Length: 143
Image (cartoon, one colour):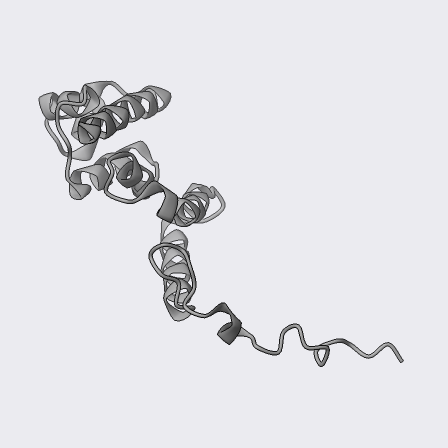
């Protein structure tokens, strides 16, 4: 019953985040566009929400949806940890507006795709990226 354990952990995490945001269950439900009883069931580990619901809840809590996806078992924690942390840092940066954050995330995704980063975080062929990087030719002249 690992899936129930994951859902329970998600519920506990959501409750903690809601309390940190100083929101009542009703306030968060309203902000996320879900019913109060449904959100209560999620927090108690009785329901497993869809990715769409998690995204709405994350937006209402102003936290990373990817973090909730990992907690819900939608994303593999080991495989996505670096990606999730990078996204969380971008989303949490108070000096960026929402449009800038979304543009940065799109650029980040395109670079990862361009570099052939697989879902498990490994590269297709890391020596192809810059084959002359370590070859002495790139050293500046000291004369």
